[in-house]
Amino acid sequence: MNAHVPAIDVPTDPHELAQAVGTVMYAGDAATQGLDMKIEEMAPGYARLTMRVRPDMLNGHKTCHGGFIFALADSAFAFSCNSRNVSTVASGCTIDYLAPGFEGDLLTAVAQERSLAGRTGVYDVTVTNQDGRNVALFRGRSYRIKGQIVGVPTDA
Figure (cartoon, rainbow, N blue to C red):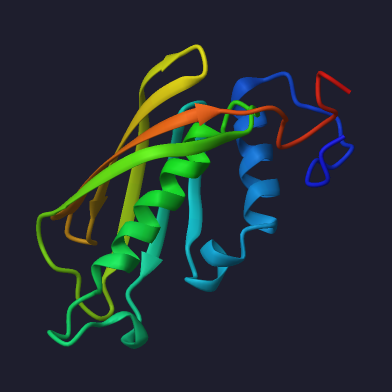
């Protein structure tokens, strides 16, 4: 049994399963918690996370450091691609920065599955500010590995 897999009943409803996966993943994700990210919504192949831009996230231009925007997009990607309760990791990603984030901005990252075939998937993440302005576009490629997030692994 995987060390990170709690022995709980696995929901059969796909939306309930995605929410359970989000809860378990978030509980063990120190990076996402440390940046005060919040999971706003989880569904199969979908995740929406928010993050408030803090003063310690600003670069020398007094805008949000791109690494923090990337981290938000990457976390949304991770929650989205694991939402079906199959352990999944990133195999690659790209990001385009479109506009700056400023102190106090509430950034929202929406990750959506675009393709899932066999062990690989493609996910697009759009990061916007509280005014709906596009801040960044992220594309992640995923690879499914052995294991589950919640429940007993099928190969146990």
